[in-house]
Amino acid sequence: MFYPEPYREKRSSANPANRLPNMKHPPRQTEPSKLVPVQTASHSSGIGYNTLPMIHTPIPYKRKPMRFPTAALAALALAACAASPSLPRPQTLPTLDQAGLWFKLEQTDASGNAAQTSLLAVEQLSDGIRFVQTDALGAPVSRQFVGTKGWKNDGFIMPNSASRRLFAALLPLLAADRAAALYPEVEQKPSEHNAFCPDGNGALFRYKDRDLWCVARHDGQFVIAFPDKTRWTVSPIKEEQ
Image (cartoon, rainbow, N blue to C red; front, side):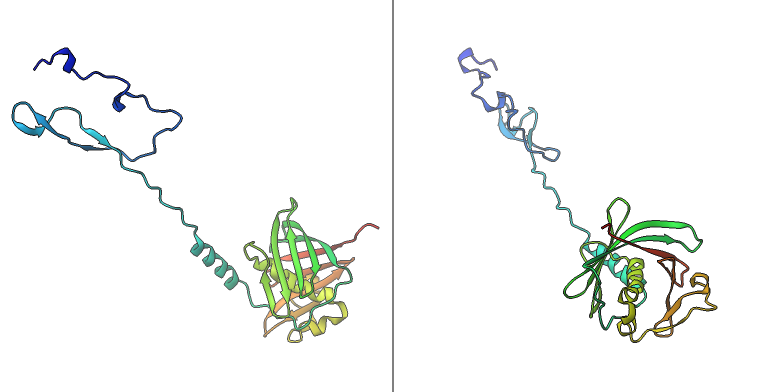
């Protein structure tokens, strides 16, 4: 049907459908639109569905919150703790000659190849001793704290059983003549005829009928070997006067 000019719908800026989108306020991110048929008046059969394009009704898009995998991290931490053998608990703690000591650590694997070189800082605290191991770039490798209640991880770094075992072996060396009171349950004897001890020299430490480590001293350095045939060379770093 033809409508006179005054009755035709004029497309003007007053009609919201004819306005351009405001670029200062972009539309919200939505999921694919759902087509909804609109019921309108028909000229031939009363009420019905027209043939115009269906109106797009946007459905708000909801982002799912990301969940931190705490269970996976907890499982890794428990696995690391379970993999490390039990260490003797120190009954006393040594008093360091200085507030802090520095060492250079050189590790070799079971085949004798160099594995890593790192630095170790040993700090005397009021209730214990802190060990902080860093790599050549200064990134932390391990942070451990030891007190009369035993060892525990210091900070948010994942537990490092190999470093904790090394620190436990280094602790009697820091105690010097008071090493016997440090681990009273640990048996110490010469390391002769022991395959993993460095050159068959030094002292073998045993705990609960199990070999812990061997310690030998050579040219001011400590060589600490473990039953898995890994070795650490510990060199004290003296402060320049």
